[in-house]
Length: 327
Length: 278
Image (cartoon, rainbow over all chains, first blue to last red; front, side):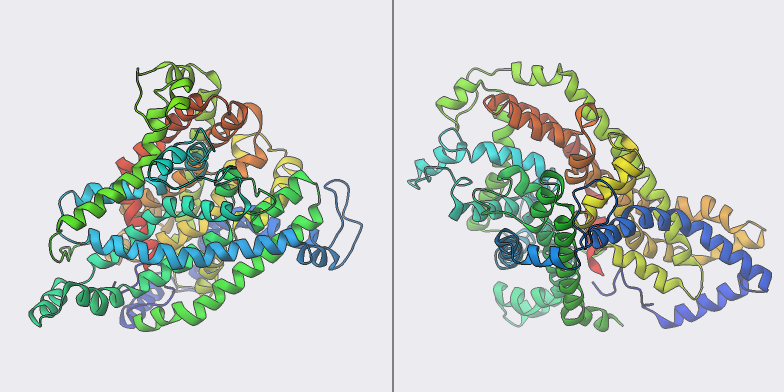
């Protein structure tokens, strides 16, 4: 973890950058004809990617923003301009505000539960135990499965009466609610979160483990010679050293939790009684099922803004430390 | 990962106990699905937690002889292949000048791709549905799903590939230029082959993302153009009484992603780690 391997726009070594720049000038930028040619080449290389992004990312996001200002049922031209009325309706709709709350519950629960659990497992797997490679593979299996496929299996397991969980929990004396875990409004969101943790813990473990393996052996040995216990070494040396990895995982987890859709749609469809709606399930049911495209547009924009503000804030408050430390 | 691992201390019995518990919890649901597929509904109803007795092969047989299953599998495969090809090709082309050329707009242009990471498909999904089905008339087609998926895969692809291309030794390019090779030729003959490991990584990531995708196919594909995740979800609602059949269908649908993962484990892992190290 000494230098960023990706995603760092800054040059890590200013000396190399200067030589490279000089090199490039010598090779390509000799004349204005060469410059024009270079510009043409760049345009040609970048054009397909930019065109795809413009058509399938930028334009739809722009249309969502435009749609959000109109009352529109999905056909005919956009004529019924209503200004910010859709936003008022979305933000005063209890189903939507609850959905935002659910998204944030998942965001914070992930950090509070998956982070310590993932870290503990990574520290555990970083010991010299037999079958470590196999263990790592197994832990990562759920992450590779489609959310839908994992969701369908869990859905079957969670069925009241016929599901596996009822039998297993019953045998250790834990009662299962009458309507099953997914059918009980107070338990449904927590149940979805348990399934999400099962699905995504492997990613956290894998990333933390990779970070831990970058911690030089010498540090461990030195601390050991000084009489530090295993736990002291982890807490004072290993965990601080992989802090950048942890911070990046938190970022990824946060963004993923805000966009949550597939698993909820399969397990509960947002129910029972809207107990598990997320922003994404809200806008899908408004847009494609109820045909309230203006409302869906406004919900999309709110979802984007929340994600954007959180990403930028996190970047400035937390991740910036990492890039600074690297420079 | 050139360094030796920093294992510290061996595992005592407690460590092995925790490891065993984690394995059981992780694999439990997968095994429940796989074994449940070998049982009859009557067996499942009697005791959901038991092993197959006797083993029933009919559920898996039914899935494999079901022509819709093969249609879904074909759709999933073709869409994933198109998505991967488009994302990797357009991605490496964009990453190349961002890594190897010097020009004023280089960093702003790169920032466009970084910002792209912040646009979740969910935000654009409803207009995307209108754009694809009405404006482009690509609803219920492979390309209609693959192109937007590739577009949403591009930011990660470019962000992972750029440092790969930056790390290529410039001596090779210089030598080729002195020999009179054009930039385009250098791109095809030198940069592409040398960045193969990176291309495989982003390719596998794009393939798995497409293979597992649900939201976009859900809106864009119906009937015979559906993909496996849609097929699994629809099958499980349509035949909800046939638990054993649902489990068999789901288990078979897991297999391709699992095989791909086991074969490409190193690449996926290094790709994810690379993406996270920034």
